[in-house]
Length: 629
Image 1 (tube, helix red, strand yellow):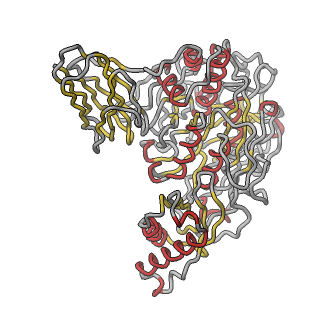
Image 2 (image 1 turned 120 degrees about the horizontal axis):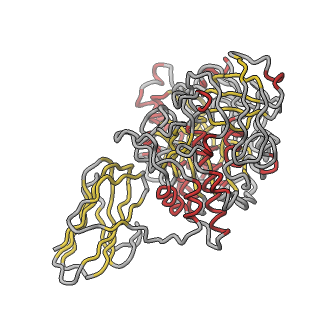
Image 3 (image 1 turned 90 degrees about the horizontal axis):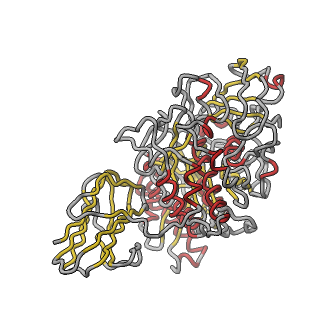
């Protein structure tokens, strides 16, 4: 990730560390009524690196089957953990070699998902950890078990040192999101967007839009050993109601876990500014939903954040209960997570469980796709079911070279691109931050960043606009499923169409079109019409996505064959007559591995037959056909 900084006072940046250069910017803030940006000195810093694979871990997340004897007894849980570790170490033979000493466990806390966070008396090597988890998962009383791994902020590290002009991402007719037209209807009033990130740094252009959040980081102050977690919190304490960002810089003492040293990013403030920076105040920038409120939930610190803390942050932000914490009095209608880690969400059940809980409470969850130029299905939470996964585009309206892609991506939004556009100043996404390299200077800086981290809050802000517009039109809040449908249906085409092998979702976010659609009646029957014996090709979706089709069958029909085939991934079919089927209410289904599914009905009743195709995993280029005779 590269970060450019502007402040209202040029002298505050004259001593910039690393490369420093002057730049003049006289571009007015378009559509906001703000004055032009003053000339300032800017600096470029490399702030983030990919963390190396951990050599050893000592924290694990275990969920027991509800109602089991083990779930009811804390002592039994610890005994079984100790026994599983003993069996694993014995099988590996490391104890006899003097490498693997005996291991005992202690319970740290119960997560909001119902899982237990536990800690081993010593760090387990990768081999020991894998063997321990395999042994633990063989217990029928264990629903799932996983390492309490790390996730990180998602920003790019391009090699372009140039500056950007402000907010092309809102106003460019092809590559922008059309924010000014959306503001004709709403600014997002009455909606809360939780930003799960590095916390919040007070800034003059955002303070009035902040509601009380929480610092979820529980790992702090421990002595770091090779392979063990660093002092993630960095603020000297654990969980509390202070969600402010003390800085997420790293130094050589953390390199065993974090990689190369880096400066503080003020990432959470940058993301929050994109969502809801104040507009029409004559200074700085405007947020997508500048009338909405931001709830900062601090889950990332030095080197990133733990899966357990992030899961609890999701639960708490959406109004769920987390033991030991006060309940959230302002639950969020939207959650933004510009963070992620490697591995499929199928292997991250605690995150999936937290997200499923949030969605069940009506909260829309928006996540960044990631910046590895990789298929998003191999990253979490980008591949989790029910989320809106956002890829990145540049000023040229093309897929950013670093953006993750694939069937898991719902749509794309401006995230910047160091290679995009003839004017290098148009390559950045500008938002709020600070010029401090470690601790904050509180200088109300404007910072340019690039990444899917910057794309995701554009969509989260647009969702806030959609929900406010729906309420303003006298309609109920859209469900998370409806929000996803509308965003897909209203997305604008890419200026440069992505490769077929690297799809980037339905198109580029069109906030104005999405807001208008949110004020209209949205039918649960959002079905595509099938034509007898004509295949509907190219069907693509994320894990958990459901596509709906229907066909009218005449009286006297002898047989009806509803099927899917081809492409990649894994889908299931749910079928009903004159009723829109769900995964729990249906007449017939086909749920084999892969995409070759078929439901055959002999002498079908006349009328409308519905087919719901659900992604058990991300799927792409699947064909759906109905044949009757």
